[in-house]
Amino acid sequence: MKVGILAPLRSPEATPELISELARGAESAGATSIWPGEHVVLFPQPPLGDEPARVGTPDGTLALPRGSGLIDLTVVLSYLAALTSRVRLGTGVRILPQANPVYVAKELASLDWVSGGRVDFGIGVGSNPAEFAACGAPYAHRGERNDEYVALIRTLWRDDPASFHGRFWSLPECSLDPKPRQLGGPPVIVGGHSRAALARVARLGDGWYAIGRSPEATRELLAVLDGLLAENGRDRRELRVVMGAVGDPARPSSLDPYEEAGVDEVLVVLGRQDRGGLARTLDAVHAFASRP
Image 1: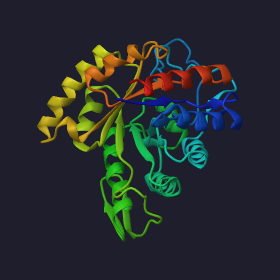
Image 2: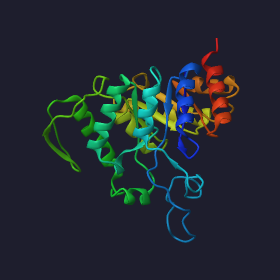
Image 3: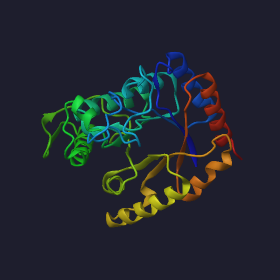
Image 4: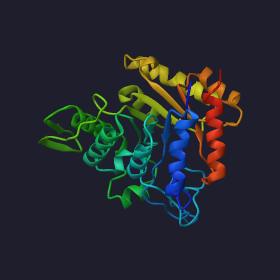
């Protein structure tokens, strides 16, 4: 089992200096990947009443202090790409239905080009109606739009010239260059742990990405995924399974149950984003990666 880093890089802690230390330290420690996260805008906790939760957390908010926010995915991955030569660069995850898919195709193709083919395209459908509204995107039918956007993006990455005609988006014949370094484009790693997310993995994913699931829960979810893959004439050997781990990463043996459950790559979480927190994360990665 490989080991990577789940790094929801946020201001003001994630300075250019800290990100540089993360990039160089990840490669030295033996990490195989780095996965920053995405939220474009954040909202205060909603008032009591009937207003729905705005983010998929227990209290309806993303737990970041005032004045803090996640650094844009494409920007921070480009920065990491320039400072690394081996580690893979994952979008963990891109909230695809609230974005312009043609821009996403262009940005990630360019990132894959300049990084030498090291991008993993992690996607999710989102759970925050207010964020969709702020981005000018409809929240309804976001699952269907997500799937169509994946098809559109793959078409742009693969075909020259490319054209697309779907329910939500149509594209006349055109060319997108540069093409990604990876033939056909970066792998599509579908995020989430709902049945709908697992069904999406089975239909169109090159992999499955989730965070915060125990080894026992991971095993149960993979059993569900196996059934859905079989319904689509596929099996798990076609996929890469990436899991943001829970437990004590300072003890490499605490991550072993994920391998037994069927995980291909476990992610150690970068929590405290200061030099001490980064050092502990890199030490944990090194301890796991250097196991005999």
